Amino acid sequence: QVQLVESGGGLVQPGGSLKLSCAASGSIFSLYPMGWFRQYPGKERELVAGISSSGRTNYADSVKGRFTISRDNVKKTLYLQMNSLKPEDTAVYYCKQGGARDYWGQGTQVFVSS
Image (cartoon, rainbow, N blue to C red; front, side):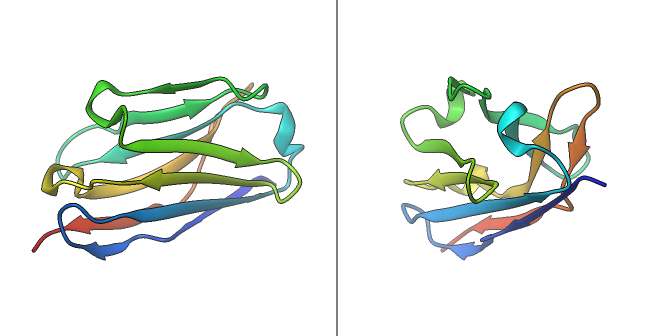
């Protein structure tokens, strides 16, 4: 049974930083592509950043240069370093494990406000 547990969300002022973590269990973590998505109220989830099993990354244009996705295959953990946060980054952030089927975490709320 694959489980993904996000943490690290919270309230931060504009311009601040947060680091999200996603702890995985129940799979051979290193084999699968992983991603961070976010969801605004009433909207569909959108890709924020992805990382392949080999470490290749891709980012949404809106976060390029501000967010960094990384993975630690030994710790089976996915990270999202978010810098220079803006109010429009306020959303629920989810991690996803790809592969033959997708698995999602429960989400963590990020709130950017002064």
